[in-house]
Length: 222
Image (tube, rainbow, N blue to C red; front, side):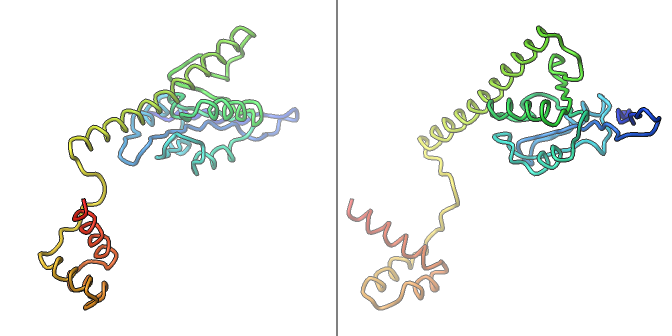
């Protein structure tokens, strides 16, 4: 059984009163609705993020125009902590990852923890060398995340090109024409029937009727 050990706590001011509490949020991202976020969620719970503070978003990491992420950024305040499983869960665009990291840590003063890379834990006090190492690691991992995304797109494009070369058809299934198509196409060409009427009798749209007539005329002229 996994227990939720909340890191949320109240800070106290000089008079002993409670000030605003610091929260810990987990951000989980998968690229599509078909992908399973369970592994990331379990990692958040094991780290101690409360279930209610885990935000799951099913959207591509190509940019940061993600509704749940933007809402989370708006909600987080000074000294809150953002936990992510790996840097590519934050995003996959090198320059945007670097900019988001700077905005979160320098402008909003949010702490960031990357579970798969302990060096990327801004809760820890770093000396100059430690800070430089963290910056280098961040830039390297951000570059790798972007490069991996580009490789994925390249492999997809190559796979589609290879499939097309084998005669695989992509896109909507073409409507099978009735054996009466040529008859109505002939009547239409003679002006004896409108395209809408011909299409209605064939059970297709008039746009499809006109497009297939043009295709057949083109094939005859080859």
